Image (cartoon, rainbow, N blue to C red; front, side, top):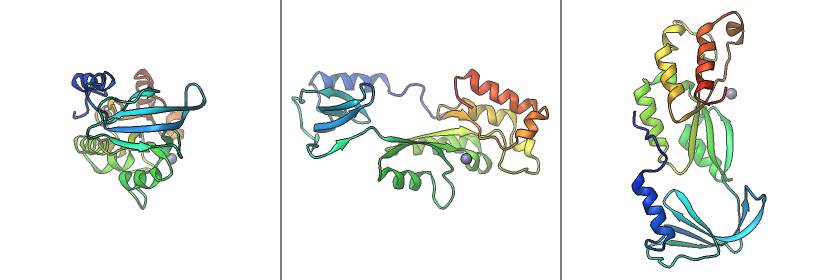
Length: 207
Ligand SMILES: [Zn+2]
């Protein structure tokens, strides 16, 4: 599987520390930023240093090294953390990338999407490598793992095989299970779906 186990590699973490220590410049500096501090729940003014895909410092200090750094004066802006869209079916008139690009214009940068189209039309290996590519875009794209299709399919059991569904549930891009259309089937005793729900929970993901 292509996805890596940790969000940042050791080398990247050491680079982040080098930026904070002033040995390397950040990539972006948001100067005089008035931003919503989501933990303190109030507006705060500070300088925000960004190294690649990570905010490495927020505070009064300015970096000593600025070579190659994009400096944005945020004096007239109000900054908020990227909004989260928790329920997307990203294969209507758009695709995950075009949907994210459109939504990001008004500040939504994280998405939790239905995997059904990827699951039905691609082999897992292809789907996971596509998700890996999508993850390189400047958005956070997460997925939910379907246990059943929107409508009954011929040979549904073959398509929704235990092996395939299980490897989706285990994927680092998947943070929840569902959405479930076949509730009557589950209530009538479909133990496979009940098992997948349990398995998702065991991995500390939501249903
Ligand atoms: Zn839905």
